[in-house]
Length: 160
Image (cartoon, rainbow, N blue to C red; front, side, top):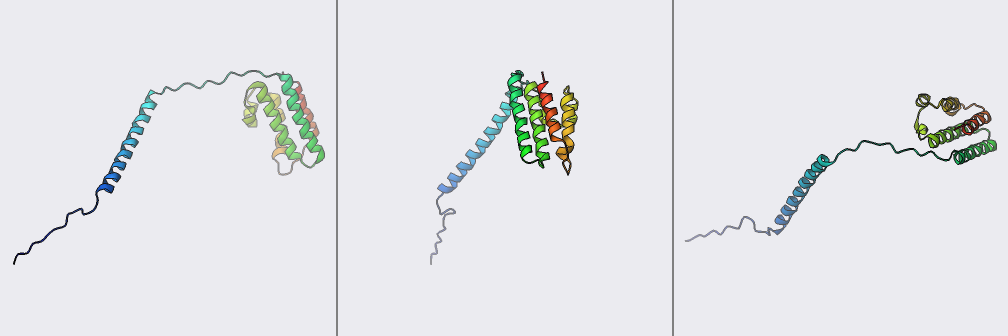
């Protein structure tokens, strides 16, 4: 009695999906390695330029004063409508005066703390902003808004 055994092939299914997945993985690996090598090459080739601050062009101070004095008038009008809004009035004055000095000089005092402003040549601004701090940041805002508006207007008007 002859017994014959027929074995099945090891892979009895299509090899095409395995080949496709293998090719895609190989392509991704090559792409990632190529991008890494390229980034290293670009960094090596790239020369850092030193930062150059843009040249400041002085604005027309007359127009600038008119614009920012008008903003102070708006703050005063809002305060006159509701005299209990002391804090927003001082916040507005601080923003307007700092922005005015920034536009007039190119020094970014609108982003400076009071200590940083006091280290600059703008001592009038430092004194004025110092007066704003207590009504602006205290729990209970107390201050003479009209007097502070007058001082803010004087600082802008006398600016040159």
